Image (cartoon, rainbow, N blue to C red; front, side, top):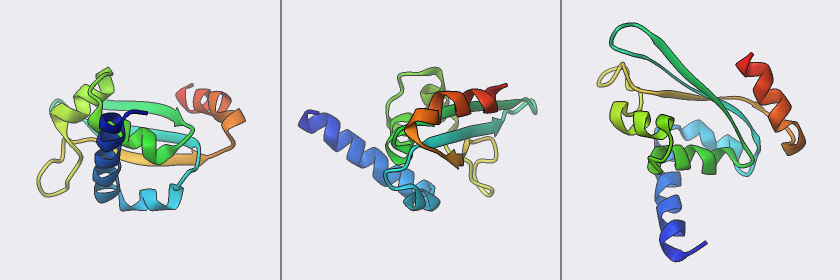
Length: 110
């Protein structure tokens, strides 16, 4: 990993931990997570994902802007009950062994 990528990831992790302090509980853990929001028309939007490292993956979603979800997080920001009720919320659904990630992710999607 080059220096620029490491620095970007470090910044993303700092943002993720500030926005979601509970992520400290998931240091170097794999698992299944959920991003959710309600749009301005009341439509429920969600994304279930898997990660070998939950904190790193959360940081990537916040800073990358490569996927549809990443771009939506940039556009709608993170949920704030006082400032941004249409923003994205994040939660860890479960931790599990890396060998179970694919299976467990599919269980939540179905």
